[in-house]
Amino acid sequence: MPVAWVPAEAHAPAAERETGPSSVDSLGALAVDRDPFRLTRAPATTAYSVERQTQPAIPLPPKPALALVGIVWEGGHNPTAVLTGVPGIEGNRVVRTGDVVAGLRVRQVLATSVRITGMDTAWTLTLLGLKP
Image (cartoon, rainbow, N blue to C red; front, side, top):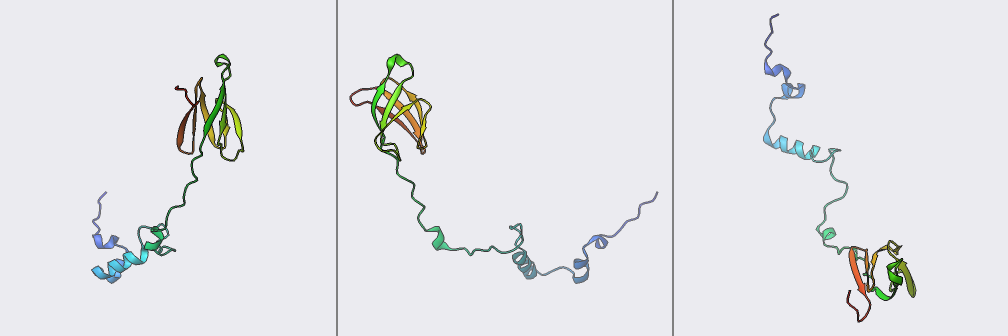
């Protein structure tokens, strides 16, 4: 079966065939009008503002001043710690390994110290005068 050759002009979109090639200026205006970097092909709804970028970030809440008051060791079976300075809790709070209090997780209770994580911080609290 013979194959017929079709000139490239026949495959061009109708708009190009009728008007011919566009000038460089009109191509720039077309790109701005149809904004190729947005899915909706429309301008942004909020205007760019340098002042908006210079506004200070929202301050993060301060880190709590945790303190270890005491540890109940009982030979290492089910160790318990007494903390003070836990956010939102007045006075002391009794905690064990795995407890989560006010977004702070008790990772480990040792004989002389407690490891706590939360609020993008890790604390190792020790009893006064003792080293872990």
